[in-house]
Length: 134
Image (cartoon, rainbow, N blue to C red; front, top):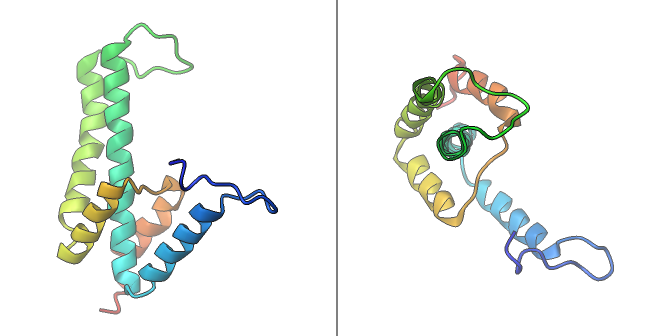
């Protein structure tokens, strides 16, 4: 976390600047429709996945003999397939997100924003459900 965001409040012991910035961003997102928020969430989740896949491939290439708790079997081809297929689907999801959401996603990417993957299953359902208000 950047030092400016990590400033700790002397009384409460919380990163108060980060909390104010987060609250401001959440308030700014209130202008988007639910559909736009879902697409933006998918975009940001896909970005986080691409970073994870790139780290996975880079570590396997740079440190192939590194001791790990688990290891994907096979050589570089298997690793590239294991990371490449979902990365391609993530890129597809990002490419079909729409212009407004793509622009917002790129702006967030420029700032280094990413999302936790714990909400992916609900996002997938919401995006592919037949309930579409717009």
